[in-house]
Image 1 (cartoon, chains in turn purple, cyan, red):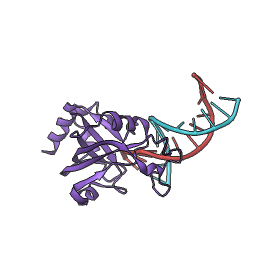
Image 2 (cartoon, chains in turn brown, yellow, red):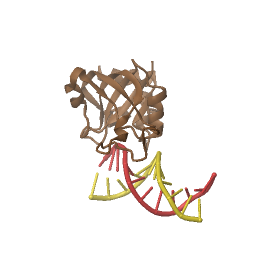
Image 3 (cartoon, protein in one colour):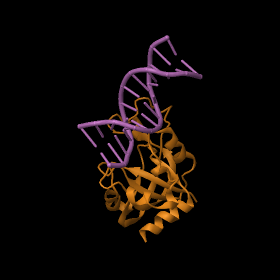
Image 4 (cartoon, protein in one colour):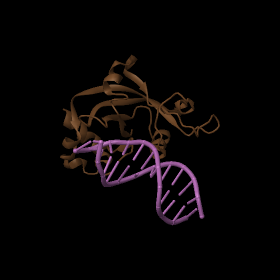
Length: 153
DNA sequence: GCCAACGTTGGC
DNA sequence: GCCAACGTTGGC
């Protein structure tokens, strides 16, 4: 099993929105970066665990834990001119974007802020904490994952 | 709102 | 293939 960190801007879609969604499930559309797409398409598997992170937020923090319920399938929002994720270069014949489905397992009582994460020596190599890190789909090692979960307990 | 870091685009 | 210009991300 692989572990991941997915970013979301709570102004657009927050963990509270996910908690209110039917079955606490959602599709994860809108990824428009090739490196992130490659992770989604090739390495995110059903049953994988996902840490949810609020970016552009106050506070910026890891806010919960999710589980992948469906592996990569075409992200057709790219073809929809009215979608905020519309990709004018995409077409039926050339649709490079994929999405997955996930379900909320746990909303952390106490969000783990960036500042707090930076203080954990086990997380020095966490992609999220790297200067200039922008990747919205990030792999997390099992060690890192366990260290993060331990901070919530 | 500022701005550093990063990814993409496009001229050559 | 290089690289400058531009747009986006995202912390602060």
